Amino acid sequence: MAAGYELTRRENKQLQRTVQDLGRLVPFSVFIIVPLGEALLPLALKLFPNMLPSTFEGQKSKEAKATLLRSTRKEVSQFLRQTLGESGLPVSQATTQKEEFSNFFRKVRATGETPTAEDVIKVCKVFRDDLTLDNLSRPQLVSMCKYMNLNTFGTDMMLRYQIRHRMRQIKRDDKAISYEGVDSLTVAELQAACAARGIRTHSVSPARMRADLQTWLDLRLKEGVPSTLLVLSNAYMYGQGSGEGYNQIDALIGVMSAIPEELYHEIELEVHSAEGAATNKQRLEVIKEQQDLIEDEAEQDQASQSSGFATPRDTDDIDEKEERLAQAQAEGLGKKQVSEMVEAEMELAKAAESAASLEREIHASSGASKEQK
Image 1 (cartoon, rainbow, N blue to C red):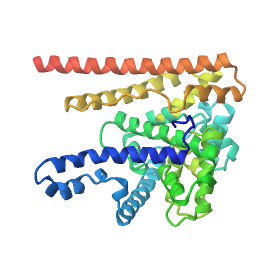
Image 2 (image 1 turned 180 degrees about the vertical axis):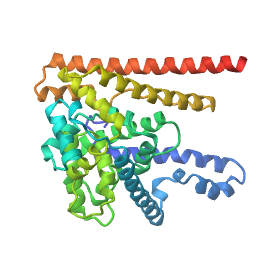
Image 3 (image 1 turned 60 degrees about the vertical axis):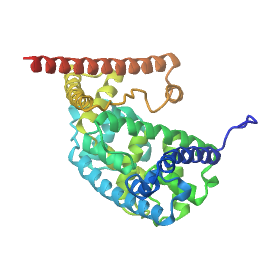
Image 4 (image 1 turned 30 degrees about the horizontal axis):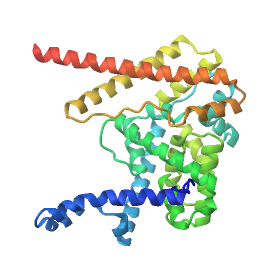
């Protein structure tokens, strides 16, 4: 860095690990300064195992954590397959007007046909990360956090904030791995990269892990498939074992055929609006569903504020604006048209945030007036 050279992915990981370990050493100074404080050190490590720097973590501890994570991911995989399946929505021909969109959902839900990989990727691109996360139910958000080894406590907005933050980290890591090549990773680095993305690593050969990771990179960076759908598809595949008969495209079909009703209506309205075919009935239905979600989030936010915990805000898209401009231009849209679309989405996000804030203020004022009475 001092010489002006950019750090490689491995050097960047090493720097992050060293800084984190130095930060973890700070709490240990308390046990040294306080008389007889070292007697409480075993209890502190029992309650907060992540206090221990990575260089002091034993092999048994690593294996225990990996076993626990595998068990959790198997349970989450089964739960997501069940809940997403229960929340599936049958499609009627009267409400599907865009050819690719309607044909895909007709195949996977009505006729049982298997769509091509190209059709799956085209439809997956419509389901942006942020739109998908905003319409997942709380049980599905909690399961997704468990699968990604994240904290499961807090409101829905806190869970979405955590997932968005992790997705951005993975996206930056995807670019670094893609630039240096999957073959440049050691087996340990390969296992860590696959585990971070929810890709199976137990009883899987390094060659298979490299192939799965390369598939993730191709779908995410080259094809533009949202990372939220990729994580959900990995959860689907996790419950299928490590066999070769179930690939990423099959898992994406399973996820897409069982998306929540609110998400389907939101995407359907967006597709039809782009074609100028959206009806007032569709718009009204989506507004009602989104208003219900806003009210639920407002109640959760008010409860968290009353308990003294502030809910973090994160309205930025996981995919950067420049990347979305480049991707849309590659699909044949003009720069001005694409820029206007992105700006309109940002304005809608700001308007939704303002509406949610107003809703919380109304709830707070009504609650205060009731207490005064």
